[in-house]
Length: 563
Picture: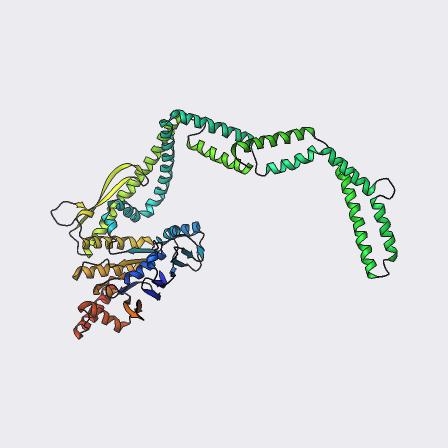
């Protein structure tokens, strides 16, 4: 759930901190007081598009922070792992800054992310429904998504498998038609790639190989110089001539040892020269060992020289370094794979394409079966919900429309509804009124909220245009949703406000010649006054207050009985 919300210099809000609780929370206030601004802030914290227009006039930046408690499911964990965001104590701290210069800084648990990443995370945290949010019901292209959301437990594994099969089919289809469109160019490209692939595979290059070979080549090609230098060095240190290097240093050690004990500085000098003498002895021994084991391998020199020439030849063709050549080799092999392999002909590619299409089609049929069963279940459940919302005469149905293989299978659907007895069912988007669409959306949300695992659901005046018993029914449905998820609701209906677990009042006032929005949580007495105002206007009469008390009492009874 959304636990804390902090807002600074956002629209007409200079500074605001709100603590939210589980259950259903209602936000009320006069039109234009700034209720929707708070929802906009939550929207930005869950990936909404930022704009400099949100920054309070006179400020350099707007700062938004939200602390969200989550119950991580597999889908949320996958997003967090992908983004590298740690989850401690099942809490996410989202921090977003909108700067006047256009900068947009976003951190989630102190990890920098971009707006796209925040949006992918936000869809698992908060579900915002505005006054026109039922527009998804008005867009037939969104209906399949809604049905799939309802059937996601059974559908998702098959859909993931199908999408992999469809991707393979698309790649083969693209390669096949590319080849068909220009057979000659395709064949030339294939020949060139095949040649390059064979040449590079035969070369069998290894990263770092060139540097090692160059070092070895220098040593082998200068064998005589190395041998001569080692021999002369050894002779200089320990040759058979008198007063060689070691003998001379040994004499120095002997002379210094005679005065070593006379003073500390002589001891220090003696130890230094003696140490050098021992090190020179070891060096002379190592020089002799290296020289005696040195052997000239003409065949190895020839191999190293040929190998270096091959590497340099490939670098001239395919890249400045061995790593560049290896990267080019990967690209060549990848393109060859997409083209169907170096040895494949058009007929073989066509066979592969047909096989891939059949695999995708079989999985698409499985998706259709799952969706058909889900449509039946969804229809039954929506009818149950619509009865509670005084649409018991309405008949909801899901019409399937067959289509070619696509990203989601071979299905397209559209929701149909019969609102009046004796009339034929027609597309929901064409005949439903605004109030009917709001009730349809609430019916679906009541069903989906049990399974979705969304942290918070926000309704921004979705009850506009209804009254009386329908308003009461909508209030009760929103309260039901609040049992499964935290619900924040902006409303002008006293029935909705009365049934909430928590009530915040939002008001706009002038402070120092500047307009500001403030929020305060209402206690029981203040809540009665606000409900009375919603019932009768600004004049708080005794009768209005009594009506408010009665409304609260009936809402309390309604909640307890439904639980």
